[in-house]
Image (cartoon, rainbow, N blue to C red; front, side):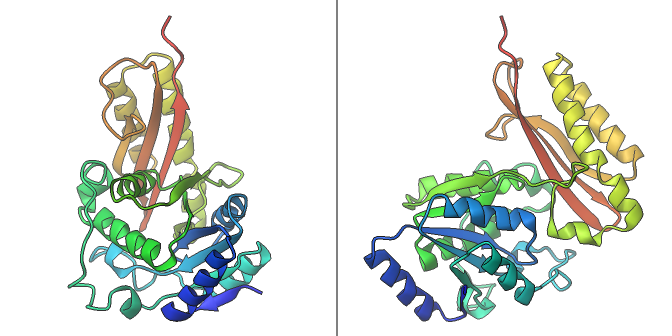
Length: 286
């Protein structure tokens, strides 16, 4: 049976016991409403650690004034059952008061410069400050040896990696591969907001990423590829926030393709915001 903790002291007592036994601990942070992608992260964590702790916390500071905090799906009973089925050892479900004892408006903030100031930051300027802050608190609460995050949130993973390195957290960060539906749509808790018609249209995002990759490898200009991708999504009914090609560090490429690249898309379909990316390697220039 998975152990469920709502009390920080009780969880820390258990973690102290595990550490005294010489066990390696992995952390899998989530906001709940779990799906196959989350469970695959637990399975990956199990490959690198003796004990796995998942967290379920819908972080209010990550949501902007017009975003979906109040209606974000909360399914703790089903989540716990699913975590049991993938042999998760413990679940940490903190309250807002535990995470932010002085209140969310008085909390100490962490800002990760550079990587948190592009792409997502254009329309969500404080989002990654909130992500970095809550992840740092989870790191301090759980003190894991390993932490697993989905590669689907590519920029988020980059922010967490930089924060972990700069603040010298003794934690290995592992990126879990994106889990997709059979038609290519990246699995996400927000997919359930899509209507049947929108669900069919949503596959255009992944197809557009594939087109961006093929175009860049074929030698088309980055500007034309990005413009065509934006146009294709717009014609399909998406409100496009970005459709870009970047280096793995999320910088704009300054040379012709002779190294790794990543295509990234963020677009809104109806009332649902979808993000996805595709990493690829360019052929060596002879």
